[in-house]
Amino acid sequence: MLSVAVAYENEADVRRFVREHAVDYPVLLDGDGRTRAYAVNQFPTTFFVSAEGRIEHAVTGYTPLPGMLWRLGW
Image (cartoon, one colour):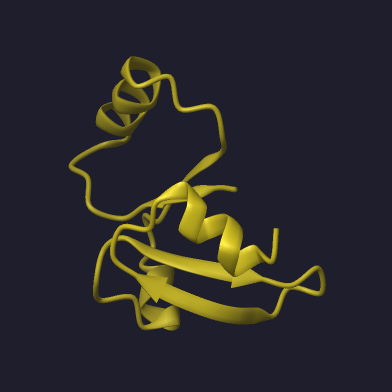
């Protein structure tokens, strides 16, 4: 799992949020607008990516852990 921060004022805000919420997975910064290439226009958007790097499925909106596990086939 990883997260991509797209709506932030500065990197320090993202780092503070990650620290204060004890985020234990990688958080990437989308400072150059890469999310536009994936047509992300709703948040959160979750992509399920194959081992080969292909996007297999995308879900918008909050998805609780049971829903994530179901989509992953666990």
